[in-house]
Length: 620
Image 1 (cartoon, rainbow, N blue to C red):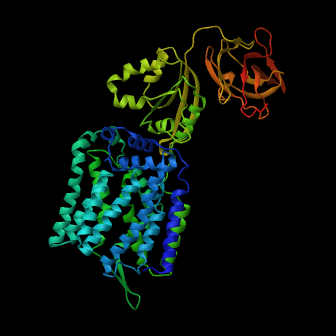
Image 2: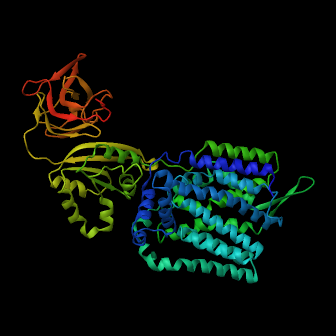
Image 3: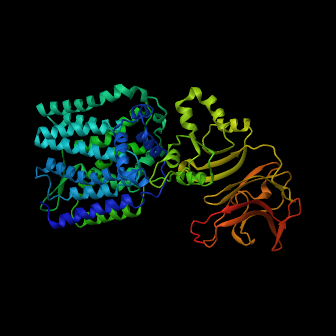
């Protein structure tokens, strides 16, 4: 039984872990892999969907069930990764006790500091903190590998059938979550060959064979189809930069200090009365050493034949690092041990070593849906996959979809990857059915641009989102608007050469979308003013800006270029239901004075429309 003091320590460590994993869980947008996970989880045919992927099915099937219960919000989907990360803290406590019992023969290390330190080191592991805030399977990978190691050692100590079956089940589940966890099974097998004898060794090896055979039905169904898929090529080759990246992400910038403590953790320090000590190698350390070395070395070897090396995929060794750090610290006597713990704690809380800035896909999707209206076509074409944009545009939440009804959405990336034989004929037929198209583009494929130009579309807007891609540099994400319109006379011509080509009134919320064109060079920056006037010509709403929300000053226009200019009219709460006019003016400032540009007919303003507006709060 634990004392109140020990329960208090465990509680504080768990609270620190929960805080670190939840503090910024919704800060960043979904990235492509998270969108891909949701895409698979919601696919009507999960088997066919995953055959195009490079992963086994357990996480995606479980995520589908979870999303049906918890919903499809970013927070709900990421909580499915946070929960196993918190459970891993409890598991590593028990695993550390099993290791101590294996080393000392004590009753599962109840009075040893290593279990508490192992929890703390896993709390501070940046890999776990970062990946717990992603809707991906990596924290489940860590949880199930830790489960497997715990039941493996427990079975060795107890020789009970229940522990043996629990270990085999955990080993099977971990490889059904991610193929790379098989390397943890290899580590267990080598440990059995080195440290176990007789019948126990045979039962250990047969257990691993059974766990491997459990995966065979899945491999027979889709395993061969997954080999060579595009996702398998999202890997890196070993280089000094990659080694440095792995070094910092898992061993921190204090890597020399961390590795020294881990090396010490492989031994037991035996102190004598005169304070002299010796290092004693522990057979149980073979398991931790193999847990560290084999996943990395086997990944490097396999990467030469089937590329899949990515630093985040090495997260299965995170618990081993935490355990070795804990054992190393427990070998040091107070007060030096306390100082080392404080140093690791302060560094872990205030320094982040495993982190990357994700593209602002949420903002990109919101920008598009802010201006797209019923009857428009929305396209995405993102190198590496645009499932994250599909998530934001199509998810079915209690508050409704982000993409309004009446807007068609298609992913060019998915069409090109999954239906290459029909893509070139499908795309022009699709484009030709619409007059306004929004294209979110972050790709080297020019097919959409080529066909839009061929079909007579003109680019009327380019909303740019800059993204700091880190080592890869700045990456520009574009949201383009394309329009196609008849060669009719403009709605109105202004004396500065600007012509209002078309206009569209969007009622909820009230917005006026204008398309401007010029037949001559403009040497000034003109401002567009859109006003809502009541029947007494009193202004109740106004929006002034340069075209394309101040992003396209007129002095930079080309002759015959068409530019999109949306104007949102936020009316006063006191306006009443009745007849209103929407008028448009052009002006510029000269010597501090406002100069209005008249229309070709000599008027200072153009009346676009007269309309009846209802105010639901108008009791009169």
